View 1 (cartoon, rainbow, N blue to C red):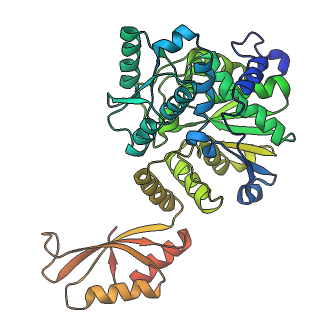
View 2 (view 1 turned 90 degrees about the vertical axis):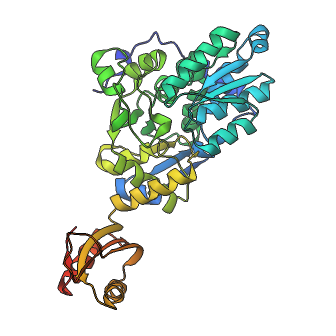
View 3 (view 1 turned 60 degrees about the horizontal axis):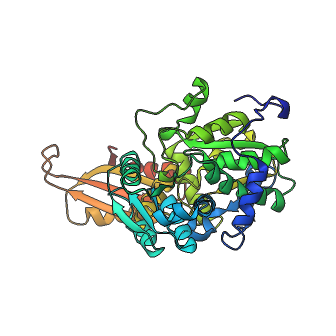
Length: 412
């Protein structure tokens, strides 16, 4: 998306900076002003200061509490008496559950059948009634809307409401206060509520600051939507980053993102997992894949960002099993895992000799599969599949070359 001057930007937007300032007052004593932490590694990579806005350390583990609380706080007494309903795979669910509990409002939250158990448990812990329905979030949203129609409960949309956008925009006000010298803000985009809110807060106060949105390439609804000039639904979405796994932009966020966000980039699954790994190893931050998307964009094209840069780590609610899988994926993408398949003579001590070669090469064996009965093998052959932890791409090459030099036939 091309850069535009402040005069070119659409003035008549559904959310103003005054709305966001009002939301900030509403959130006083509820949402934390999360820390702004410097990243030495990314600073060195980009050549100018990079900071993390740590919404992964927000109450409920993400920025979603902000918008949910502002939306529910704005309901009339009669609306509050009817209760609220929401649909979410995790972060919005927890935000609505806590916000409703703090405001004394009954909350029902629909979650997909396959939602991570820790997120389901946390949502219940915050006081909501959880109903599991549907395999994907779109089915869950439909069920929640049906419930709202049948019961009169107020549907709390995860991103497509002006109050929600205003609440998320308080992140932008905090960034300007904590880092007044900021030149670029990078933020993940799913439905667009967070990016839209930050853009309103920042562009109306500091139009010189560049706002860059980031989507997972397998769930990138904004680029085709911006090209078409209207929200366009994707035929399918696929990404590990469930926090930004949204197939269609919200109407309200889309208007704002189209008017105020300078650019929307996409990142691969490899980039997301590598970014999550970097956050954990270098910054000691537990971040979910969606929250690591701005870091993925910085890693993918460090020369494209003028600093100082603030990358918004939007959430830290990652299922431990998903974290384990993602870290393995990240290590593989970084060249720190090596999978090999090789053949050796099937005789006593052959496997021990192979493991000795790997030990000498300083490769850590994670898993070994030893096959003797495959019909493709000769009578005196065995096939071994190895999964190794290495020190990086160069070490991978050295290990494979060393095995070939030792006489092993590497087949994969």
